[in-house]
Image (cartoon, rainbow, N blue to C red; front, side, top):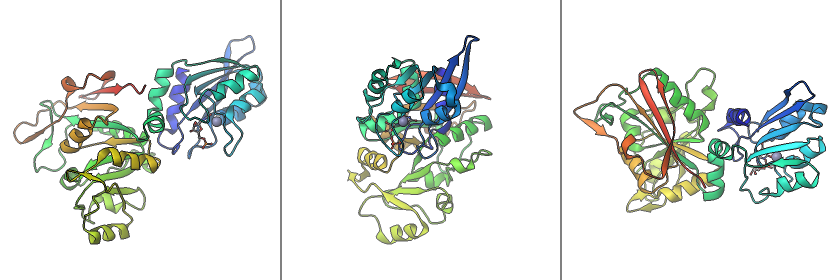
Length: 359
Ligand code: AOF
Ligand code: ZN
């Protein structure tokens, strides 16, 4: 199951509203267990992982065990349900992991299998599988995307220097890791302050993964983003959404729209974009995970609204000192509802990650 969960990660961020599921089919003809089929939910969300793995296994699926990271589906989509397909292929035993909150599936997938005489084991490494498909689960259960907060802190707890534009805090290896995190997200979000100060592109620029940039979102209630921004330059290749308030200048809006920029989230509270409503809108657009990359004000707003599900802190070796912008959060200030998931190093930089349990 651990291998199936690792496999499932392959298409994270590419399966639209579907979770990226992993399936491994194993048989033992007396000489020890042998993998005869593997599958991941395909790009776009179909075919499902089980379909792919069964196709690879062919007749070898008969009498084998299938490890699936999510309860196999029970509904008729473009193809018959995976639960039926597994039974029809002669799978003898299904080991399942995360439960599916989708009412069309929940409990029904396992029931189909048991009725067909297939042995079923449920919830093996369920917590680990759920962590991997947190976006899908949170969107299904809470009607908003999973919110991942990523911050790079200097040794003295700063996230930048006032008026200095992009300040490099972490090294190359950490930067590449951030790009990998972007690959798995459906959208990256920043505030207009950061957009103006840093003029970032927020695209993925890792060799071979250039085509996997998530959508970009800027919280920009008065539409201050200039048409010359790097974010606008690549809008035809990678979508850009601006969250503005309804009263914002319609001419600026129209000009950006002509460039291909899309607008979302017009509800405001005390003059600010209402984040819970915006998150609902993003979920309705199909987004299951949003990576919040700054700055301080936006980070604080998401934390205050208790909308954060995962926190990733990178810490560089050098101090910023005078003129630094203090981070709204550091390792010592992680809310008690979070637990530490992992800690690692990228070159000279330290990285730690915390999650809040979904259930
Ligand atoms: C599986 N295996 O690999 C995935 C599943 O729109 P559809 O017909 O593709 O169905 C989407 C639902 O299928 C989704 O909400 C979830 O319940 C399930 N996803 N199921 O058996 C898979 N990705
Ligand atoms: Zn299915």
